[in-house]
Image (cartoon, rainbow, N blue to C red; front, side, top):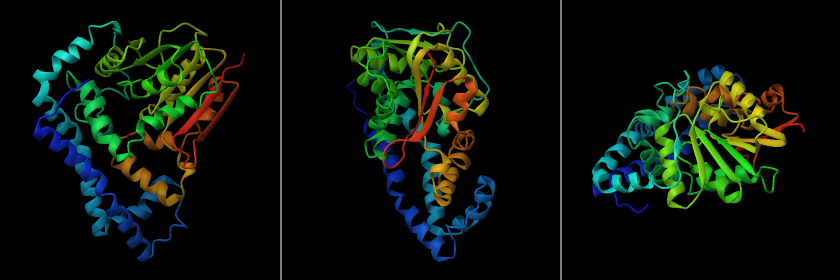
Length: 348
């Protein structure tokens, strides 16, 4: 959809994205100073809590690191507010277009009794102001203004290709029917649709506002997505119904108990001989301990992701086998081992 931000909103978004990306150079300086001051990265403890206690005070004593933390904390706390303010400047111009895209063929099936699990209720994921439903057009705010205009530039424009790589990892050539769990505003759904253009594609999420943005994207691009509001642990779909069940970047947002429930549901709705493919952030065991400390510090401790560590130390392949899948592997893609992907097969 074509739209033009007002000068203030555009400048605010660009400034925030630039602060986030350009402050990264401070990280390398802080690393060098910590090592020069005697931090031995080869003998760090494995336990995440012990690792935090050992490393954090040393880094936080370095001026460049404190400035880096200031920049990252500020961008996290402000990104949602900045995006909402930018939207409000153009609301009158874009809301008719957004509403029109919701009146076309793709519809969202809303739950009569909306699910509201504890890990979801009132949580501002990644410190986004209001969470996923905190604004009447939060799907556009998150999917377009935050994700596309703020987050994607900090991943060198590769964030959509990274998502698509998970769908490409599925060991299937022509699945008839696919279910995506936790589709949010449809960023990964786009990749799934590109890899499997002939498949019947279903996608669910807890958030009605995010589903509405996925609906707009599908209608704008002539795609036939079946979007519905549901908990990934209770989709309401028939047994043995999908050739492929998939998800991206959802499991690090939920506790392990919920992950077990979701995998049980994946097993139930996957056809015998079909696959469940889950993509997410890199597991802690794939990092050296110093890199693992940084990942834990910026996400679990300061990033607004309360279940990040719990996910990152869990073996998803073991959980999948425990759920009843006959085969399961969990490993990183490519030379950087990112993202991490669970490929689990249902016997049959």
